[in-house]
Every structure is written in structure tokens, then in C-alpha cells.
Image (tube, rainbow, N blue to C red):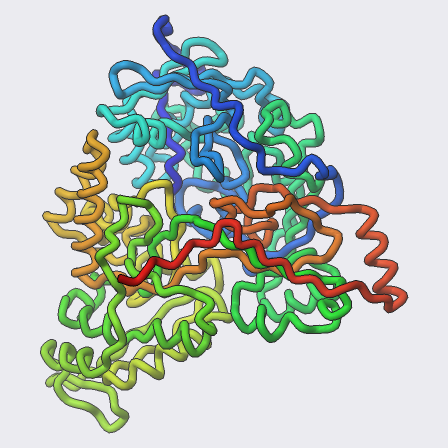
Length: 615
């Protein structure tokens, strides 16, 4: 999903910023929150190469514009600091690029002071100009990204530069402090990197932005930058080094410990698993129940070379399941969609294929956002008789010789399910077989990794099986507002909208009173649920990973917001692990000699959610 990395610019011409003289208010109360508990380990060691894989080579290194919202985006965004971030246990704002911040009396402005040591990976200093530049970039039509164009125009008024290390973000409207920080907190963009060669419209951005920067990764403010690329084969991220500016921030100490991250493109998970068990890859995700329960009992596990880790978290869950494209024939019919909701057997899939390890997502737009979540909503149950009744009401009142329903025109009740990973084929195949009980035919449309998401962004799908991440509070405008319906390259995958929903979404975005905002959120979720445009899928409130025994991590390993313990195909970890060089040598020697260690399975339940009590 689009990240709320917000920003704003003043007047700009080819990166020479002209800013009116601004006087910093003298009554500001500066906040640093520099005494929250640390979650890394002082035992961590720096060095070594971490080896992992991805299933498809990225379509672009841009983080904005066409095709930028794919799986590889996390590698280019998620380990890079913003102005501030949430502490993963206490949830308080803590410093990242900025050391201090303050709230204005107008409920529109947040002031920031940049860590004077902050630099880009190419050695250039990070200054207020880089925060000012974000709006120039995001508002430019040359990036071909209407979502960002509109968002940065409507939500942020300006960014004011006071000096090289002091700036303020000004909202277009008053917001409560929680919302105000969420909208004001953003990652800078390196203004010096985006020097335009061709800027006929004089907006400070290259007219050929999309093509020029398609495979040209920008410098990083974080600890890693993209160093080497073998197109279609591999990518390598390199650490800035132990003198990285971030280590002057206590919350970054003892994190991001490996010196290089080598990523191979391995399109088949079974082949990747073999590489892992041979020691050519350091970790391997074991979320899939068959991998954890059955296929992780091979010789490397039995001999203790590979350990297993199961760690619970309390990460909010984003929208996901079966997304119904209402712009496609028959799927604009709410009765058909209601039938689909009762013809898709997610509960059976979880029970029979997933060993009940996963949990049914009760709400298609996500859960775990506190009072923003409508906890009265429950997922539709698999009732093929009711589904068949609804299909008959919609005109599919006859059953063909193959058991699939047909209408008076002889049209069969059939829809294609688009999905991106071969390991999900058994799951979709199960849904296909169960749907036949309602006279519904589902066909399987497997599209490779990043191409699948492009396919869905272009709204070519009928039904799409995928999950999305989530921000700190639910996002609705990008998913359900009419501004994004029937347009490509945005997250309104259902193409659904309504005047009532538009009104609520705009109210949600502008509501100052936090309790009223949460109430509007629950209303929106109720409307979306009643529209049956997302059939809720499942959620996985933990990480499960196999790892070679030379990898180490803190105790406890997990925080509330730890999505992954290791950099397992994504940068969505906190970088708290490290490589023990002594254990690496000892393990390699033991493998060569055929010597064994004790098998090891670690289960960290520190942040396991308690099941709600039954009345």
C-alpha cells in the first residue's frame, strides 16, 4: 500500500529553493523521547554477509510512479528512517532522522530538528531542503502517480525551512496530535540526486522521470544502500559501515549488524528451500503449515545446523482476502457478491490445509487498530445453499451438466482468481472445489510475483487473492473513494465507491475529534462489509522462520511490532539479529565432519494475543 511518507515544498526551481524568511516560534516545547527501553542486544556483532532470496526481479527501483508499489518496495523504503518512528513496544514516538519535535498551537504544524550528523549514503548531508523537496517531487505530474499528486496537494499545505537543520510541516487542516504526527512524519528525498536534465514545465522534476529513474536507486538515509545489481539474477545491499550516522541515535545502536545483504532471484520456493538446507541461504520462512510441521524435519534440522523460531506479535493486520473487481461483468451486482461471500470457504481452507495455524480475518479491511476497528463485524460463513439461492436471484437459476450454474443467456457462473505465488495454488484449488457446491466455477490465474500486483493495479482481475500491509490507522481513501475507482495504478482494487462512502471517508480524513474519527472508521468498515467487495481471508499473528545456527538475536527476540525476525525476503524486520563468526566456522566444520548439535526450536510468546473470553 502507499506509505504515508508525507511532505511539502516551498517555491522551487531546479532545486534552488527560495524560502521566505521564517521566524521559529519561541514558545515551543521540544520533545525527544530519548529514554524509552532499548530492544536490541549489546552482544550484537557487526559484520558478515546475510544471504536471502526473492521470487521475482523488481520491475523498478523507483518508490513512486508506475509499477513502484510492488513487493520490492519494502527493500527500498522499510529500513530507511523518517523524521520519527513508533517505539515497537511502548508505541511512543521516538527520534529517527530528527532529534526533537514540537507541536504548534494551531493544531496544524509540527516542528522538527534534524540530527546534524545525518547524511545520505553518497555522503551528502541530509538537510531541511530534502524534506522541503518531497512536495516538489510528489506533486509533480512527471512522476505519473495521481495518488501522491492528490494526497500531497490536499493534505499538506507546506514545509517551512528555518535553517539547514530545522523545518516544519504544516497541515492543510487542523488535526489532533496523533493524526498530525502521522501526516507530518515522512521520509526525505535526496534533492541533489534528482537533478533534472529536461524540465520544460519548470516544476523541478525531470520530464522523463519515470524512464530515467526506473532502475536508478536513490541514495539511502538508512544503513543500507543498493550496491550491486545483476538484472534478473541478484541484488546486493551494502552497509554504510560502523560510522553510519544513525548510530549516534541510541535506538539504532546494535541494529542493522550485517555488512552485506545478498539477494538471489529464485522463482521456485522448493528450489530456494534446497539452497537453504545446503547452507547457501541463511534463513527460510516457515509460515506455511506444511513447512513448519512436516518439511522442517530434514537432516540439517535433526543435526541442529538449522534452528526453528516461532515468535508472536501484535502487528495490525491490513486488508486482504478475495478482492472483487466490481467493474467487471456481473460483479457489479451486489446479489452476486453476496453469493460469492458464502461460496468461498476460507474457514475450511484454514482448517484442512493450514492446520488451524492461521486465523480467519473477521473484517476484510483489517483489524488490530484499537477502536478504529469495528469488532462487531464477523466474516461470512461458507453456506453453499445460501450462495446458490443468491446466484439464482441474480438470474443464474439453472444448473448445467457440469454442476455450474447458468443464466437464461447460457452464460456460466465463472470467475478467475488471480494470485501471485505458486505455493498458494493448493489454497485456491481448495476454494475452487468447494465453490462447486454452490454452482460456482473458479478458475486459477497464477501470475508471477511482481507481475501479479501490476496486473491487479491495472484492474485486469475479476477476483484477486492478496493481502495488503497497513499504516498506524486504517486507510480508506485509497481503497474506496470514487476518486480512485475505475483508474489504474492505485489501490482501489475493487473499483467500488458510493456517495455515502465518499462522504464518510472525507469526514474520516478531516475529523479533529479522535473519538468521532474512530466512530466514522467503524461506520466505513460496516458499509464495506455490507457491500461484500472484499471476502475476508486470514491473518498470521506471528513469524515462523528457519535459520542457520550462526544467526543470533536478542532475548526476548520479539517486540509487539516485529513482523519478521530476520531479513527474510523483505526489510520488514528491526535489524536486531547478527552473524556470529565463531559459530559460523564451527557449524561449517561440523557439517563437513558430519558432527551434530542439539536440535533447537524456539517459541517466543511474549506478545501472543490472548483469545477473547467467551461470555
